[in-house]
Image (cartoon, rainbow, N blue to C red; front, side, top):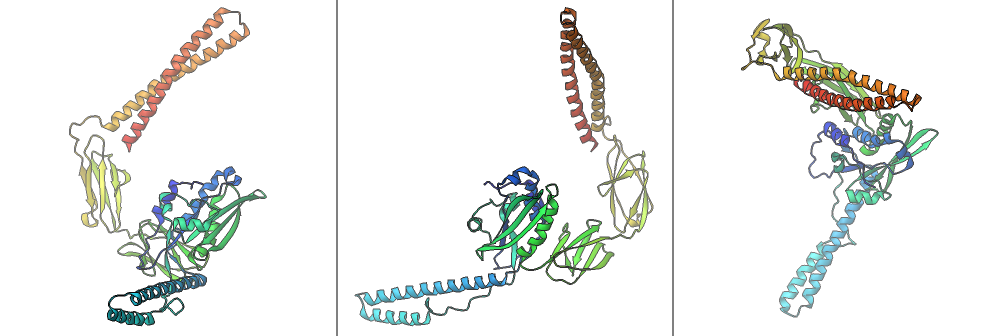
Length: 459
């Protein structure tokens, strides 16, 4: 089956994926999410297509994997077997060299010395039956990484052989789906295949109405986080205003735009919100395993004054820090930091000014006429649009009137099919309606195009 594609998936990952600090010499733990199986329930409910995307989005803040005890034992066993294999291979190589030296017919003294040297090395080298050197313990945590195809908007192809899919796609963990219906509800089972264990180690089933897929994704993701991370966890979610406020958790600053943090201890966390050098609020947030703990807060920067802005001529559009703030004359509030004002009036050049808290309480700006002052592009676009709209307003009633006459002629002809005048009248009104309808359609298309240009000029 071809994996389903979703541009939203790529955008979602690019927007919310946190940056994970690099762990040198520690292999990542890669997980992938499979596409939905090709079953009748999936075909009947197209909304299910968003389910894998929603689940991946909820896993985007997971950073580390804590290997389970069984995974640690399997890892140690594989390392031990690898050591035994390497030791056996080294011993076999030494024996081959020793036997070759013993059988060589040339230089008996040199052969004897080389054989004694190889015998000594062989006694120091553990063989496959001996005890290999100390096996390094596996790392306590491994950085979590989504399958590289998810960043391109792809899902792992659904497969009846999850072990083969893990080998093919280089996955440590593969999440697969089963979808059915029961009593009018969708029955959705999500299960995980652990490549290190060679078996399924997670399964969770939820029931949801077909029109509420997001709630099913939330339920599945909450259960899945424990399986992917390897231990209980909680998510701290921050709804802060202003959005650009900086967030610090136990002194660790979150990357700009990030609004959640996965934690693995059930305790109180110190949260600080900063909106400026002197604007800071501190909170305490207690995590609860298996739940999202949300903090909604607003940091109000301290108002340090206001400046009145006037322009000559008045009525110019005023933009503060790139955001429209009204027209002149108007008052601007300051919060202890400079602000950039832009004034725009059709027919005049744009003016920029930096408003500083210490500059005073009045700013007057004289606008200069634009070189070659005349109708601006905005004015021309506006005039073209209203001209096209006027022509359409004239043409449309004529078309409707002709269409009404055609319907009337058609009705009269049905009542008296033998009357040639009714047939002639019907044919004439139909021809006129065809011409008028074509003209009206062209004028409508032209008005839409002019409206688009008008909107672009207004922006």
